[in-house]
Image (cartoon, rainbow, N blue to C red; front, side):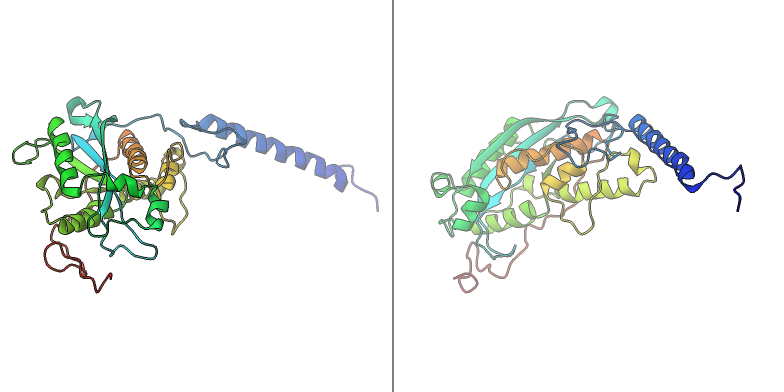
Length: 317
């Protein structure tokens, strides 16, 4: 059967199809290169598996919004722990690290540039179970010598209160707030659980300047990411994808916001605090309103609590 002069044989037909596909691929790549820009800290092609993600777009386009608070106190305590114990354990605080953040700009009540202006750090000597477990030391890096030479929790709070007074945040005599500030932590546990437990064990009331609601930064990052991912133009919003059912650890939060990896040692209180501060600074820069989202109940009780300051030994002999 003779072939029509207008029909190409099969081998000849494949060549223009392949060329067309290659041209289309080149056009798509050029289009992506024109519409995506890497944010600060982008890695080269050999160091990052995320190099081709068109997701860090518009990272350098800041937005100013009305912010309610004048300052933020980022706190990530470390506490005594034993392997296998849950969050109901009577933990005692052994490190109290805080980063103070203030606005660099505030035109007409709007702001977007936060910076760390000072830090406070103290180790704390536990009193109920003064001997640290090997698990606790391995997790936090805090040694027995460091806590043995540290002041007890009430003395640390006194020192930290002077820190707040020096920065004009509270009134020296009464502890009344002189500025609008908000405590921030990674997760709800630091103030809601650890501080409330510690005040009970130390037989002291929760200070008035610490009794207000706090901002759970992990939750705030999750809310920011959910709002960003729901946007129809999410590829132009700068949000990295987060797999479902994944805990938002500090390193994952940093990645989600397009920041450089965790700096320092994880579960070191001061290093955790500094990295959480980076998250808060970036959220502000992206125009996210920063506000408390976790209530604090100073009168909360756990089953192991006996009389004032007493840990019932039947729960933890």
